[in-house]
Length: 319
Image (tube, rainbow, N blue to C red):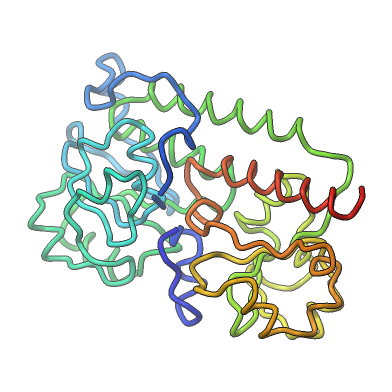
């Protein structure tokens, strides 16, 4: 994911610190045309959309030099076939591999405005969760066309893909991609088992912080067939004490690999967790933060991987 800065900027970066790092077969194959060429019949009407701040974004032409300020948005551009139009990215944009060859304008929180201007963008994609209000205000004041994305759930991912496809002048390609993703969503829903084990997604160990209800991650857990162990806690990203976690007694405990700790270190740091059902069945999993935490086109890859972990934990438990 866009590597998460922990713990101070954790919440601000959660959803976008996850946007671009696996081979292309992780993406559903939408069998789509080259998005460098706009759909001629749609181009004129496809230049105005309403972004996730409710702003009307209207372009005078088809954008050819796009700067993406969030990894998930970079993934969306490439998934829509617009990689050739990506003029700049952040230092966190690492997927697909081609994104690494684009000029870097800085990190998520403090991109270099002068560097962005030097790339002469005709469109900048920015996120609510990952980028700062100061960056938004600076770019808006300069009159640079901005599209703001804030997908808080799967429907929001679909909306951003559809809106960006319209801005690119390639709504047909966006529709084909959405059709492919929706087929994958249906497949995953149909593959869910009858059991709904509790899944705790930890986002920080110090302090202990989890993904709560009404979050993108909460929906991924539900889609995979699990139940969010932190759903009853207040807030989208609640902090926990050790007693609360023991009381939850989740069936699976997940933590992102960008924490820089392995399973042995987690077990050593929290010896009381040995009483958890998840620990007893070996269901402590270190997961790929980029795949699981980025609200982008790989959302169903995350759900499928989690579904596999749920099945593995169930087998271990003898279910």
